[in-house]
Image 1 (cartoon, rainbow, N blue to C red):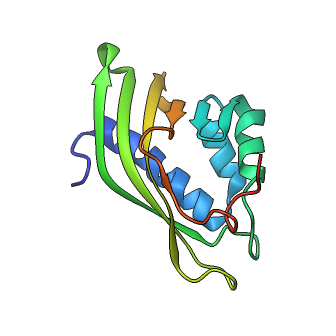
Image 2: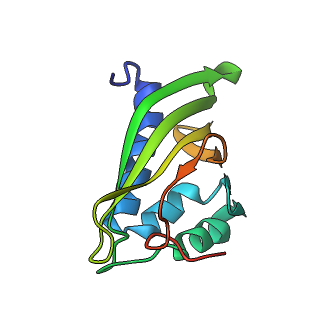
Image 3: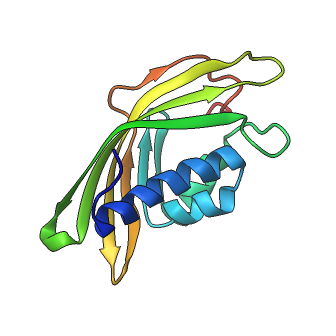
Length: 145
């Protein structure tokens, strides 16, 4: 299923851009996408530009990248409040492979996101990954809090 309206496409593209930035090691872009957000994970809550950047510094890197692939499935986007607030729910599988870790499913979770439209631009306002999270071996993915 692909987004059918321009608004759905804009929100969907924010999701895809974030996962691509993480997998490619483009943490400046990922932090930019989280700059106005409150992000809740099972490890804690991060807010604003410094919070997003701090969260990303926990990722373990292999040649500048986290050696991951984020796979999105079963996504849904609903618009509220006169079309300026969008709620999305996306199921995410995270694969990782390093020299020490064979190809593994390290996380299965869902991202419950809220996006807000500011003039003509959608931005991430809230992200919650704490519900329904299943984790595998994360030792090669993130440093402990």
